[in-house]
Amino acid sequence: MLERADSIKFVLAVEGDLWQRFYSEFKYILPEEFAMNKRVKRPPDNPINAMISFGNTLLYTKTISAIYQTHLDQRISFLHEPSEGRFSLSLDLCEVFKPIIVFRSIFNLVNNRKIQVEKHFEKKVNYCILNEAGRNLFIQEFEERMESVFSHPKLKRKVSYRTAIKLDCYKLIKFFMEGKEFTPFSVKEGM
Figure: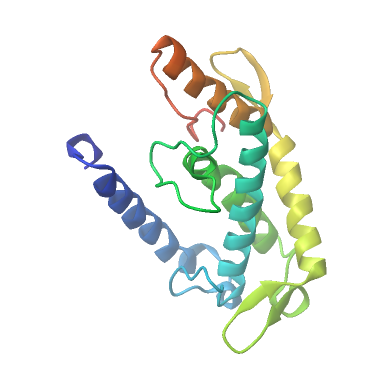
């Protein structure tokens, strides 16, 4: 479908459809107490949505930090539309890292019973958030994931996911400055 994409809106629609398919499979891989009917962001309405929102925010801020260490401008993006109070370039760059950083953190916490609904979440009438203990557990898992390493096929050395985010920034700079093709990080690269 992406090969025949004629607009960014079409690309974003395909992406949205893929995320929905991904979320619909959670019922098969997560315990029942972490069931999720649909993705709800503001405010998250259940423990999984709370962890996805929290994890995405952490990744977004880590990506902002990586971009600040380069000559890229946070406000200029290629996929997400720039808007007031949002750094759209970091949204573009962090998208490919969500499965390997955010979702692997969530799956590890839930499936290894490190995080529990009754102990680590605060539920109110129409929202659900991680409590302080839950946030601390999630941050620890997330940071361990950011520092975990994989063998980079082109660099022929071990690289952390934190470094991989910065490498994508540099690849984007090379695209702009030298016309080199920009190929974003791939999950296959970081397995």
